[in-house]
Amino acid sequence: MKLIRDLYERFQLLIHEVAKFGIVGSLAFVLTIALVNAFHSGAGLGAITAATLANILATVFAFVGNKFWAFRHRKGSHWGRETLLFFFFNGIGILITDGVVATVHYGLGYTDNFSYNVANIFGIGLATLFRLYCYRRWVFLMADDDAPLPEQLEPETSGRLFRWLFHGQPRTADRSRGTLSAASSWSWVR
Image (cartoon, helix red, strand yellow):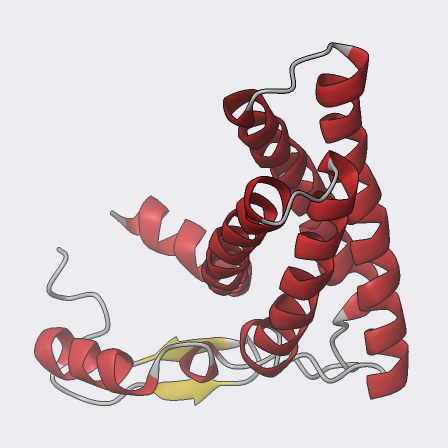
């Protein structure tokens, strides 16, 4: 159990960021698929036009979710810089998705709705991996020596409830290690 605890403590920031990024991305994904089908099948827009328009609208949604929730603790760069880079990398992500859709729809000739949706999903998956890397690397930066404490990443109610149920006492911040500590932190695991 110590190994699992140590791994969690080491990668806690990454775990929380990926989880929040995943929630925002999942909601944006559902929005994208719904809009792609509405634009392509419902409104009769072309395959690439529908995918591009849906992705642009989902990008605006994702910006708000990522900036003000998933990566809100990262305050390392200017808001305008983050916005510009976010939309730049999302533009590349849209090109990745559009490239997959174009290859399947026009290159391979699969024009049915099922193939169109599979191509969109695959393209979104590739673009998501690209965006996660770019957001963490260049967009939402940490200020120098300003890594958040783990309790700042936990949801307020569930984090407190979890600590109260299993630890019986609030944990205190150890800024030198960037972790939380308490006398009975993991005593319930042993």
